[in-house]
Length: 334
Ligand code: 5GP
Ligand code: MN
Image (cartoon, rainbow, N blue to C red; front, side):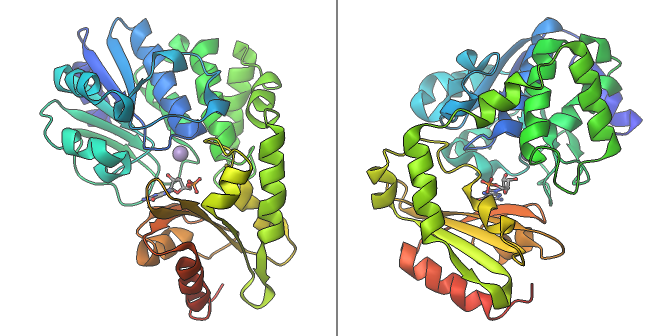
């Protein structure tokens, strides 16, 4: 953020405000961590913040401090629309285009209050009064740490805010492994641990929290994996019937796509998950090295994200989507 942006934020926050904070639809650890971290920071500074998530957040994030205060737009449209309309200021975190909020987009388009965007995805839209957007950061939570520091409020970061920030840094960096993990990332985490953030309990809450069903579903997903060594590619399909068989709940498929990359010689991994409710195939892409899955998702599957981690969707059937993907593999070089 430049000096002008910092001054603009300072003047927006100069007096107590009603503030809506919004993550993307299907919030992950970084979206939840950044929105809740900002929520606690704004509370501490005498504002009236409300986090409004477009849809339900996954169970494995329900332990996060403040998650019980989150309003779910798709479950309570009337109330959430009223909060959005009454807000003096709106923060959008961990996304940069209104369509990432699903149906909530229609409401966001009608609002006249100023927006602030904090995000690390490519190609931000132009809706915000202040846009803090930078793809160099590994997580929005790391950006939030800097954002609070730029405002001269670093001492406001306590264990509650730190817990939220740590969660997003941890999840979006693949436990500090992805290429955007820097010395600064580790220095921030070191500060958070010194503050009392529990770097043993949090990973355990996030990653040692599976149900037996989830592991069985993972087993099926791994059995379903198809590999094409000549394209350095591995992909997984999960049909709605398979999800039902293992009593799938939201969050159960989180991280499964990464298993493809753990195979020697594989640099491109994908997972195709059938969602009969929404009548789409939800897709996640991951890569190692130069292959740009963000571009691939934008070009072929109505999606986006980052160079090494992106997502998209398909309106075709699972089998047709798989055929389309197989055909594309012959045209790209990985
Ligand atoms: P995931 O595969 O974990 O859902 O998402 C990986 C990355 O891609 C995240 O940064 C996420 O925000 C982004 N992403 C996932 N799905 C979509 C999508 O449908 N559209 C866009 N633009 N980005 C997506
Ligand atoms: Mn993120």
